[in-house]
Image (cartoon, rainbow, N blue to C red; front, top):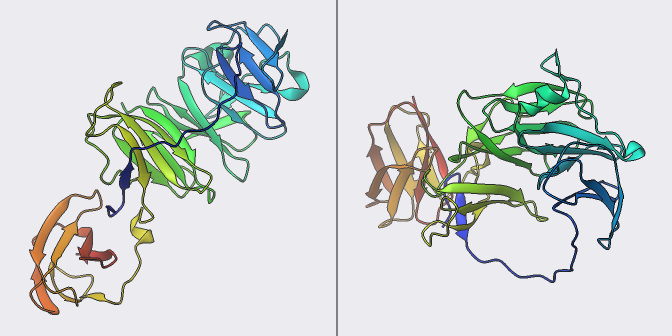
Length: 319
């Protein structure tokens, strides 16, 4: 099933061979392959590890525990973050020092002021820019100087942000408020809801990730438990925004834009014509009874999506 701007379901994972690697509570890996880890769940316990998992020397008086997530910057700079302790970075050239970003929105920041944030995820795009997610509702932070200074590029009052990921073309995707998957093609300034046919907002959406084939997935459970109706891995279809919708010569709509009355030409006589809004909600349906058929709908001005049988999706613009 392909949704106009959304996800199809896939609820099967293929197993792999795992190698024993123990001795740390959480790990982080520099871009050169060097590994550090917290030997326990408390601060001040960060050690170096060999690639085989052997614990080495304690790195420094970090007073900072590693979280399950981290991010690589440029020049072997590693960013670590955790709830209640904020965000920091470690340079491989000086492992004994834990550094804290200097400013946020032009305001000087300290270790304690970063601790008041809840940075929960971070990525780096191909141009070296960094994007950090603060799930206390402060928004999406961006850095263009390898994490020293940050600015807020997006925020929505009283809304949490859960995770961020990107595709190879640097399109950004966030999970917002446990309810929506949003996409940005302008560096995080504006975001479009592409949730499509994901389960209802009561489902707890855990994680977004992009695989090696540049496909976007959403991992979902049901408020921490398995529910057969919605728990699983959901894959974003290739039709993921209005700009991705292709023209299909076997179905024509004219005039377009229109005021809700238009002519549709399709060879799929006898099949259902379905109109949805951009969120994937069906707003109109009828059965085609002729190749050329006049359609009249009472819809608010905006952009809608039309599909008949196996035809590709078409834009319908109502003014």
